[in-house]
Length: 345
Image (cartoon, rainbow, N blue to C red):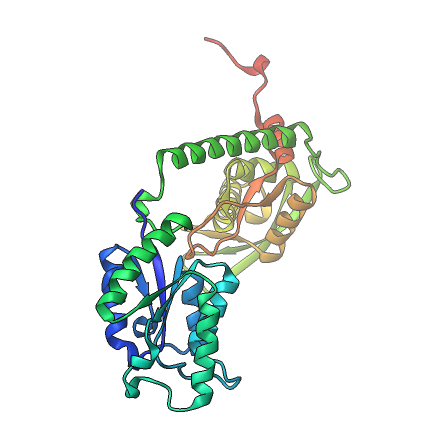
């Protein structure tokens, strides 16, 4: 698999512009991803937080030491040394490149006070305790970075980065397929267990032939602002027979409520209740919020209905309801036709 490695380049900046350019070119020729301060985007995040994040994502870390210690924090430590210490702390493979003849560096590219020069000397000794190479000029540095990094990659393998279309190897795909099969088996087993351990309906609450009076609002077509209130009486079995089939999978509450409204309208049109004996065209019947809420609460209390769990689109704000295993079993016993009733022709 073709991997590319992110390499963090750490150094002072203004005195090593040419050297950093050579190093970046060398890394690009190796198909590596160079990361350094000149590549950092402008951001609201403070500088050190941003630097740490880039180091954490890097596979290798290179530090280049010239004639300057660099700008320091309030604690008096340079950012270059802080970066180096942080990479070592994270266990990222590091490699140092130190100038071979510090005394030959042009005066304008060296520290101008003894305190900074002393800290640079101490930092150089720290870096040289790990793998280091000396360099003479920018071109020499570029070639030594190439050879040194090749050795570092060979002796310290890192994850690197791969193209998204190459990330899934045949072995990985096979492993994912196996895991999916295991998940399917687990889900099947869980479903079987839940069925075998069916929780019966809660008979402490009214159900079956027990009755409930539902408050209904009846609006006429010609007098839309006028309405008549009335009531219809149903058993809980009647209600489940109407709503249950729609909840075998999952159904949005507006659909369930509209289904029951239409059922009540047919009841009224068929004259099943004397209070609703008059006929209207284009009538509209609505169950009251209180009565509808009573149905929802009762079916949940009985353990016949529960909230749906399927994922919906963000735009779908409806509440979905489905039958519980107990509710499904009860509905089947309620609506299934016994074989003795079936006429065979």
